[in-house]
Image (cartoon, rainbow, N blue to C red; front, side, top):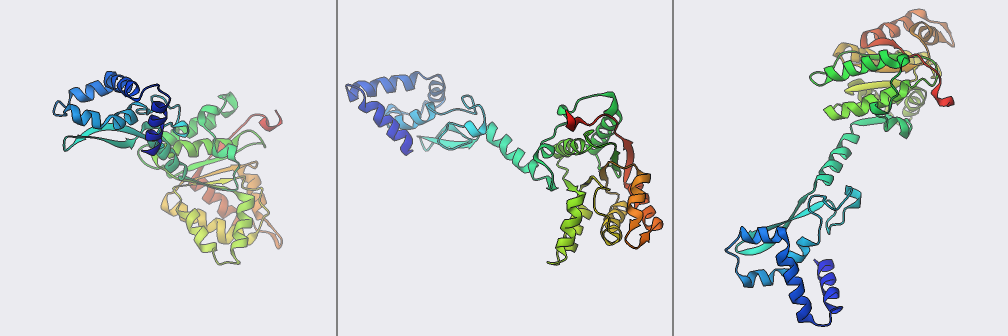
Length: 309
């Protein structure tokens, strides 16, 4: 209330006559279309109550109603950011109550939706990706069709298989995942995006504070799990057999989809996973590949390296 009262007093102080200024203010307020309509709907209000409530009417008149004079929530001009004033009558007295404006409701919804995308070591440009930003070209048509099919199914039930997107460096595989994650927010479906090289280091570091199991459970049970750049991590037989295998096995059994991006096709990835310090372990690597095929469909993303542009 103080800002409104101070403004009113300053306005009056600049006038040659308080009475003249008061009369002018009252006339302007009572000629305001919204205030006129309000008073017409409440004939029980006498002139004394109206005169007593001029400051409240001034407070109402000078604020934006439902964002009409505010371009966004951050640019809100009202006394209480994100709240719009409403005139009402309580016990034959004029009162003002505030309700959330459209911009604040949208802002809060966006804040809640943003929590649905959890990421480990992903750049901001990926977290802000949108499908509308993706150039529609022949090279990525197949991948985009598969993504739209997944989204269409996700409206009613979460599909059991994600996608294994493979192709050369820089064709936009990771951007596709970020855009998909942001679309899934609209259906209140959460996504966990992990950059594989850092994920391996994170898990190894977690051995020191015994938080490995907690993190593995998070990745096992996420609505949507996205493993970015698999095959780029420093290969470890322990990580492959104890961590990656465990996560994929759980999600396969529970029918939870996994999305992957890789510069390697499945044959190349199998060779990468089979190579360890103790030799070549094709059988164990083959099991990982089988699980990848059971939780995702394989899609080649063609094109050129867009990061060189």
